[in-house]
Image (tube, rainbow, N blue to C red; front, side, top):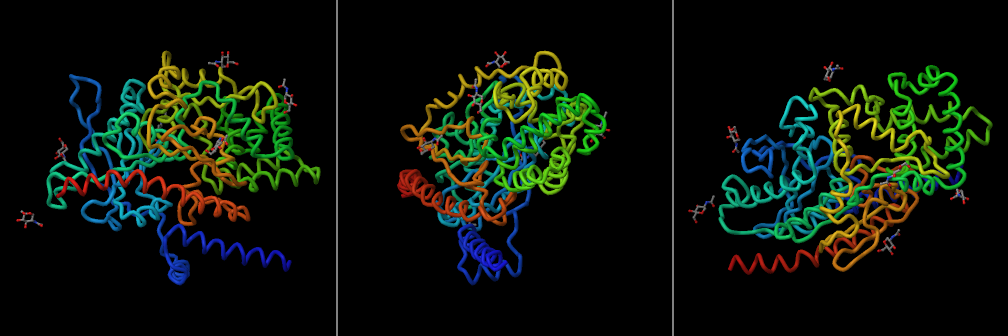
Length: 490
Ligand SMILES: *[C@@H]1O[C@H](CO)[C@@H](O)[C@H](O)[C@H]1NC(C)=O
Ligand SMILES: *[C@@H]1O[C@H](CO)[C@@H](O)[C@H](O)[C@H]1NC(C)=O
Ligand SMILES: *[C@@H]1O[C@H](CO)[C@@H](O)[C@H](O)[C@H]1NC(C)=O
Ligand SMILES: *[C@@H]1O[C@H](CO)[C@@H](O)[C@H](O)[C@H]1NC(C)=O
Ligand SMILES: *[C@@H]1O[C@H](CO)[C@@H](O)[C@H](O)[C@H]1NC(C)=O
Ligand SMILES: CC(=O)N[C@H]1CO[C@H](CO)[C@@H](O)[C@@H]1O
């Protein structure tokens, strides 16, 4: 018991330290903030709007749609401070989240702006999301959106230069993103190098992958042999019960709405992956290995984890996996699932299929399952042109420059990122037991999806190391442009 108390004290001190790194506050101010609980999850939630071009690639179609964005200028150093463009990805963008970026903004005197991805949240060009209406939803259009937005924000008569009463100043722009938005961050620097001085691609999935077997393999590696074996046993038991009494089994997981067995199995597989993806392995492996040792019913133990952690705490929704729901074309708060599946089914795939040998997920989650889903949800002819996507961006052979790639060691997605450094594109792996998807930017107590538990120590150490790395690169990339900006002003 004494040990537990001591561990708790150390953990508390580490939380304070980490909080300090994450907010750039002195210890007394940190304690004050913790007491008053005043640190918000967002730097701002004040919506701003601008008119975006619907189709950047048509010479005839001049339609526009309203796109949402946010700005945070509290730390901005006038007049030549950098502008950090934090790219929002495949979900509604409710504001600028108060994560590690706010530390960097303070350090560099940067403005932070963020643009909601087309179609998601309040930036949908259409109320009806039929497959036909989704034809302008692609990473290529999204990158062009960012370019147009960047010019609008910097130079238009309505934006920064007008606010600052000036005409011809160019601030240095640096782009950031996590996950798919991390890929967009790398691709933006690749396709529009004249509009940004550098990019951070955190867990940036720049490689479109058709059969993404490495995903399941990494889940197994992150779980370790003991936990992995229990998870594999669960899959086997689930498959048996699915054959004998599917109805009862699905009810055990409160997932009877998933009529298609593949959807149900995919839901169960995702529930396990998420524990590693977001840096909370103990939430899954501790109860499962304990249940195994105690000789408890493993399916029930797993159902408890799924219902209490994955759905309860993490906030996953069963309907996300329900193809009947994914077919719904009415724009609503849950449209994000349909929209992302469209991008998956048309452009990037990342099909999380079971590897032939030693998989955790059911072998029934195969290529066929994914292709059937694409066809069922979007109709005939929607197919992921993975080769074209990699041809267009280069995959892991991306020929960009001044792009920093970061990945978490436990994150199954890292195998779709660039994990090896090349000239002018350093790649870092942040290694610890709960280093997951985007944890370099996310690892702050006030930001969403905070990893929990004792491992936080290692994560803290990793994020702390990372701070030096990113600061060094940012300094380097910003320096040249800052000099240019100052020179231009003279
Ligand atoms: C955007 O377009 C709408 C409709 O055409 C127009 O009323 C509005 O003034 C435009 N806003 C800006 C900022 O250009
Ligand atoms: C903007 O610049 C003009 C011309 O130099 C000056 O007359 C005006 O007072 C300035 N406005 C503000 C708000 O600084
Ligand atoms: C993906 O896996 C399926 C089934 O194993 C196989 O038929 C197909 O050739 C694979 N495709 C690619 C591009 O690897
Ligand atoms: C589709 O979604 C909308 C909005 O959530 C809902 O009102 C409607 O009932 C759904 N349609 C079907 C057929 O489920
Ligand atoms: C299958 O996986 C097991 C466990 O990781 C390994 O020992 C075995 O060599 C693998 N077999 C093949 C054919 O890859
Ligand atoms: C898989 C892996 O660890 N890849 C690389 C991650 O980044 C470091 C630092 O650049 C490399 O040394 C690793 O090879």
